[in-house]
Image (cartoon, rainbow, N blue to C red; front, side, top):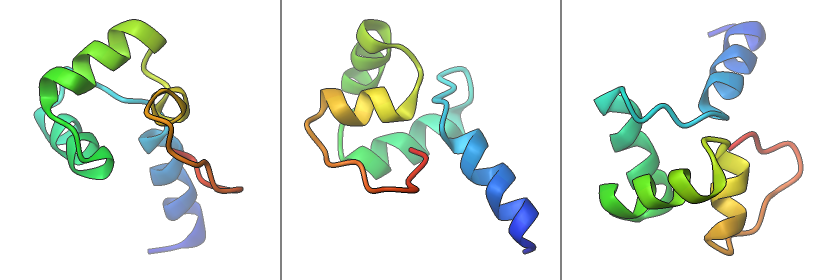
Length: 66
């Protein structure tokens, strides 16, 4: 995978798309939460993965998209 493809994938992963089951699985695994918790957080803080991470009290590493 090229650096451009990796960057595009990272940018796409920065937004949580609840209408896509594979995205829901990815983010529930990434955050270690249930689908219901993920949906509630997105409803509260929006679909930006960074905002969800902050709401969960997880550290955001420099350069980390999601």
